[in-house]
Length: 177
Image (tube, rainbow, N blue to C red; front, side):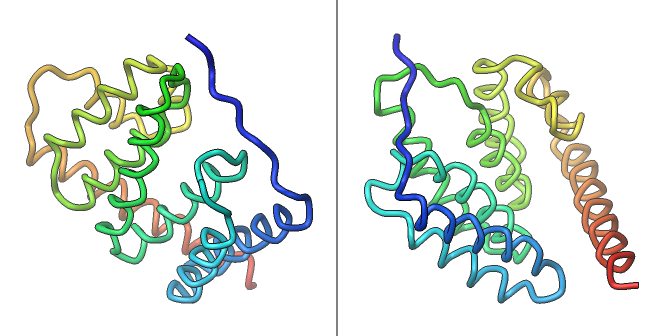
């Protein structure tokens, strides 16, 4: 089975999309609404069909993280569903587990650990433990688990989320000093 090849956009457009995404990420947590606007604008600049471009994955995953930060998880689910449907519908071998991990994370934000478990298992089937290298340890534990304690998973995830925001705030406060 072949691996999907992505295409480059014209350099100036790609640079504009990249800069908007970086600006959006650096705007958090100071102005989360402006971060959403910038990330949306970067996403809108990607021409259709969106999922054939090399910059799409980075832009989309950054946009989803910002949406989730702002509690817009339903929009994240819609965008990730489009990406996953595109991946699974192309007939190419899927080598990146990130969309499945992000979908699981979004579903955990929505307090849906059973569905999140399914997506984490799919991610594990794609990349094994390697797919979770840059992820919280909890995600790999969920992916490998046979039985779920839904309440425990949600409590552990809430602790992760609180810690991530706290560390982000600390980092931003340190930079402004």
